Image (tube, rainbow, N blue to C red; front, side):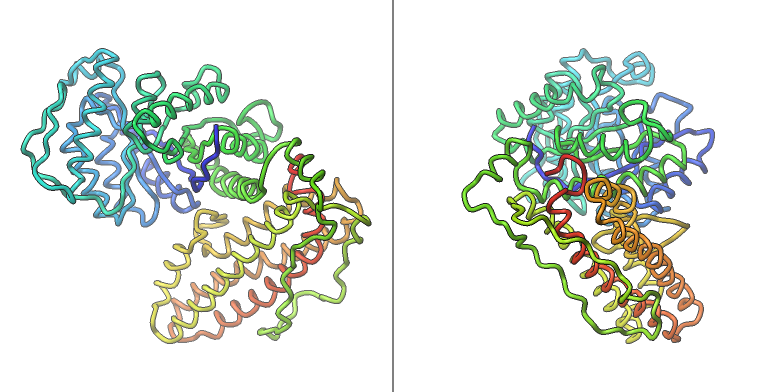
Length: 520
């Protein structure tokens, strides 16, 4: 399937156990603290051992500030669609646009019927879901004239008023496995949300199932690429790799990145109630998958044949047309944490080496990632100036840091770490764990440079932690900006110097060897 370039998202799939409600809420809060985008809950209203999913979502919404919320998936036969539509819109308005609608046609029909629901045949359940989606969209369609009129066989809504509209375009995500349901996803839904554990052949089943979603979209005149492909995943973290999503974080990174690039899956929701698994998934796996996929998306073409064609093309450049960013040369802090004159340099590239477009893009990708870090650093400095002028409170500053544009890359090392600091740490962690070992194997002459870069990562890690500590101290001593200004100035000096040095030393090797084996 074509990879359509949706922004990646990562979430948690928690058990709504009624016997430990405090723990469920604590796990949901943890999902937000470690930087996940979404927290979801299964929905079985006939199960007395579970909290009511909608009530739980509302409670968690009030206990969190940023994370998205969804049922995974809500049981349609026991949730009337007009009421459900208004419940979703209401919670979305109350949370400022943090709610999505995961929806299922129903299962466990004996339990549904025992709880007062209607037993439906598989075909009728598909038809009922189709009608319910129509009803829900009509309720939300406050820009349309007239009353709601859906005269379906299973849901008849004639004359009901529209509204309220949700705060943002709520996605309707459908759990589906059979052909009719998959075509319905393509025809009427915004996302497809299956569970990997329910696919007997695992990822090998995704091409055929994706094709059915695409078929339904085309038949309805829709862009199949607009439908988000999602996946509930489970697995195990261990020191050695034993299978798909079973092994160290790097194995998970490779497996999930493959699902993105080969099958178009762009949302991964981890089914686990283990705090350590949630933390590793959010802090180690998710950021590395994002960066690996970003690097591949930035590289035009794919595969050995494309590389061969590029290298054989007439006029392929023998010089690298990527310009490393110069060091600003100005130091704001009086502190010096390293000797820049002692930095080693990389050996010269092989004479006459050809840099086709894929190679040029690989080298440019490092500069692009660094440019994002530089832009966000400018936001940190601007935020500090606003605090000093009184335009933003210190507490508001910490909230603003947590809402920065790269907040999805959070690498939380404690109860709280400012989002910018976590972005830098995540980027360096990926380099230390994956990119640098690859370059060491590819070019032994880079060893001294890579050693120095890793040493600077350690220094910068201490600096970025100091920014958040200084901001916390400022809250306790309002008006004294001395410590925070020094921390931000030191971050500016060290990070800009380091980013420039790194680009000058390894942009060219990355253009020859790539970020990982087999990229070029």
